[in-house]
Image (tube, rainbow, N blue to C red):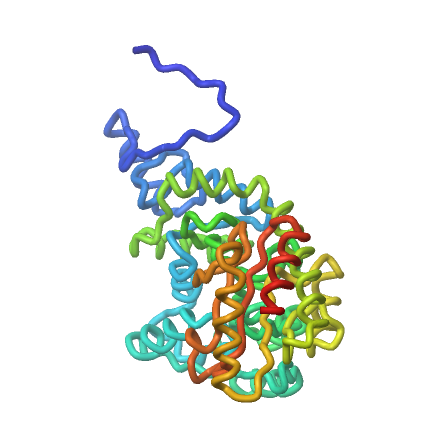
Length: 389
């Protein structure tokens, strides 16, 4: 059968494990060029190195992020591993500085891998009264001179917004590299690379995919030296996203901006509903004016939204009563809102905080809500009825 180009508007799904190299000379050229670790090679060799379907999805994310490069991995944790590992070298002994308010999986990775297996010296900085003391952080950085600074734009589950621009400016002043996990904010609200971050990470499982049906992670940057290190590390550790998932992710990315903006709008309305209810003790949402980091969020996000996550605490006279009300609420919203331990899905989902975070956040009546892009009126009806239950 004669080969010919197909007039498709989409990059095909290339499931090839290895790619045809027709001559020994072409093979030699491909492997010589591979040593340069280009983001998009002229000759593809093996899908663990690079795959054209994956590269196409990466380019779609580059357009969203406004970055010079993006690399997809099979999960958000894989992207975190790549981003952190490119800064690890055997002769470097500087400390790494992390915010304590980061994803639990990242904290476990720090403890079990970075500290226990790799012997990296880690320090943490923590917020006080749901906000960061930036003068104290600068003093810490000036004394410590860490290799990297790592933080999340919006923390999980307390939704503390970091003044990312200020943190990056402080880090730059002392020659510190910056990694930002921007999963909760997404490039719709803020693009850390524009303000000087070295690497920005997303769990693409969440809002980039947005439908709860694939896992993926991505790291983005502008520095080509970091790109080459990241490609090399991904190749040797096998942190490559499958072409099937890359193809589906690229399709889902076409609606990302519309989806996320609607989720932010829905979250703002639900936050006001929860805040006005006499059944809630507190509502954590950066869009509410009394939130400790509302002004930071307003400035950083340029009033484009405040994210699509809400954490609220139900009232109760005792821990037992709060747990009872928590379970009543979870039962009352079902099946419209299900308990699913993730976020960023198309439908609103929830997760009780105490059973997941334990002693770190032991509030028995606290629930984290990941708001979807359903009809706002329907969400208000469901949650309003549940609060009265």
